[in-house]
Image (cartoon, rainbow over all chains, first blue to last red; front, side, top):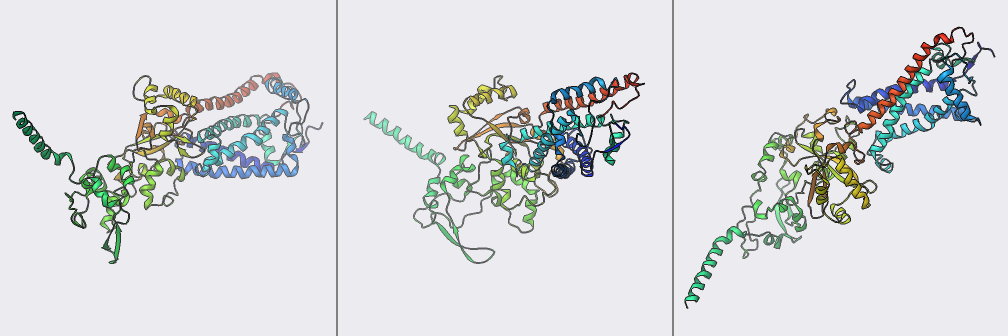
Length: 207
Length: 376
């Protein structure tokens, strides 16, 4: 295995999608906090926070469709679909690596390739995020954007309180995820190797 | 004979007393006398319109049923209480009273409202020659009881007669949601006392559950039940007591959703509406300790225009029972915030902890040639 070889892991649509999404998430989280905790925070007025939140929400939604179209059209969506028979065992191995192996210098049991970009743990988490949690957050956000207009659907889902609960729990989840994601991104060959890869598209093989 | 004389004296005295007391006990003109003619839909009079100087036919019809339900009638205000220049009816004449009655002065009873109105934008309109009378907004014969009226009933019957809420509210996020749950004067007369009306609501048919229907299902007055539910008899239902009420209703197969509406108290200050003095600070309402939500009560209205009201703890607004109202941020479920803190702290401290352990175990990894054992 040539450790110095560069692999083209992240095509342009993926990179564009990723950074638009990342910035979008951060803005949504900050404005979301201002909206929910208006009485405690005041880095923006409430109407301003709502306007920015709404616009950014739509940008993230449009961005999601860039991701969806790219992955479906290219067929690369399979990198998200767990296909191994011994998935549970692989996941366990990955957890063991992050929980112990990494501290004592053991190699990562998963080697990323363009066809097999994600380790089993990543695959599961990203599958959940991209196909369940993010769509749920976008849908709930869309309904909350126009509560009166969509009140039929909101009432069918159990009322606005319940819908808002979904949106808020996902907000907490994504915030937590952001901390972990950014930290895990520093676990490349160097702390910024992965960040560089997400800009250039190239990552070192096995690195 | 003696007996007869005594009886005649007593009888005579009774007649005299009755005649003397009669005028103060019975009105000279009863509403039914008025309705003898004025319940006829074809009753009209010819007059000249002041502005166009043309002959017009004015209807003199008063709908007895609608008047019966009006707030004036419910409070015992009779026809001649307002039309006080009619003292008696002369049935010998074609028109048993004067043809042209004096203008009715609402402020002779509604003095406070008049005072508040004097400094309002609607009064300023009068100074520009626009006829802006009390009845332009309120009507006169069919003034609705507002006590149990929903936001839609209040605004539709008054403000929306002239005003289009879709104008001038572009700055307001989710304007239509505001208009559905908040009465106009709550923002436009910011000093008027306000309260939250909680009413049982069917999410699917979008109708308030009628008090009579609920009473039939439950078996007796919800008001009585609410008294029973108020276990500590402090005249307010707290969250624990409300849980009991909810459980009781569920047993009777009523799945109550509560809809909250922010409405003004029936108070003259509601007339104090002026340009540029409307509430535009969102945070005064969208805060969990906003004083606007201090007074919260459950409301039941009946077909007979009766209104039962019972105070509840404002914490109920933040519960899942009130699923058809969410004041963004203000009535948030605070338990979620606690859960959220755990979730976010969990993520952040896991990352931090992992980093610290990696730093501490750095020496274990030193010396290993192949440092490819790191991959995200």
